Image (cartoon, rainbow, N blue to C red; front, side, top):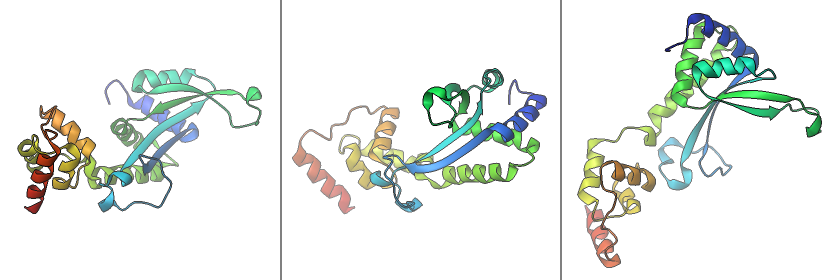
Length: 205
């Protein structure tokens, strides 16, 4: 990591072990409670999942958090201690957060050699992140074949209709990919009759 020496990493590892936490949680984007959704079915819009990652350190004194922020980025927000229940008598605490997954993975990999008590938990969470990146289809790179399908059909079908030809993609990811390829507008909506007829012919093959 640029601009960060081993002395700082060793200090941060001990500081995080005593005062910090690492959250790696998978949940549905629409936040509906329910059982875990199988990986092979999450291409469906209603099952679309998101991985939340949050590395944080809480402290009453804001000074060490400002030092961490100056070297690693992130944000610092004000919060209140959980007790007593009366909010007006709670003490103020400051929490440093780092939420970008790639930055969290890079930092924790550098902190691992210095961790004494929580190394196993960190390794387990890093494996969870790695598995997510490998298994979840909407984090995978687009294949040339998929891009070719969009090029060939960009004037024929809508984004939602293209999900039938690209079952591993959602209409939103297709829309974003269409924009990156330079197809901001499509002619699929010329007439509903033409759209339905073309869709029926394409789905036969």
